[in-house]
Length: 235
Ligand SMILES: Cc1ncc(COP(=O)(O)OP(=O)(O)O)c(N)n1
Ligand SMILES: Cc1ncsc1CCOP(=O)(O)O
Ligand SMILES: [Mg+2]
Image (cartoon, rainbow, N blue to C red; front, side, top):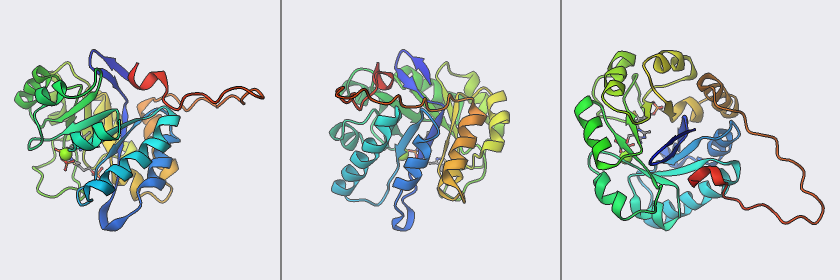
């Protein structure tokens, strides 16, 4: 987890795979079992009600584990669900406008594939940059050629924001991406298509050097239950 003036940014971001009506919640449980991370609710074909319901369900799983919940594209859903942040692409609402209508320390991610876009997003108030595709991916169509670690490094050099590499990333890529200066990675299929999603998330977290989930101490008899939102998410 990296603290910036614009909130906390975990190193591992696991994006929901909602293709073909898949249930992403088992993957979310796998992701949060790996330690403090971000779960991004990325859903392109849901009704507003279903989008909100999925976000609330993800929050119910992720927040007690100390993980952030970030909603792709939809600021309205993120704010309505009291999520921790939003990820904005080139056709979404502008970062500076979203900053004015969201709570203090709301995490705002922005997509950047080049140095100019990265600098602009930083100036507008982004918390982190999603940079990719780092490698070839079939999860999202219509993307430009993969940047590779060298292309990602050019964006890293243009910004002081944490850079999250996205697109075709697996645990095996983490050393090269870290050498390129990234703070972390975002994945869909490395978890959702893994034979063992929990092991895949753990491998990513270990490659990134994320601290493991601390064991939950047994509650003293009669002690009040602790708050589900940990101070680390928006402190
Ligand atoms: C961490 C992260 N980085 C980049 C993206 C891509 O976002 P966007 O450009 O909005 O594209 P879609 O994901 O909406 O197809 C991301 N979601 N997360
Ligand atoms: C959302 C997004 N933006 C750039 S690549 C990508 C998809 C990443 O999915 P995967 O990890 O399965 O390649
Ligand atoms: Mg988006």
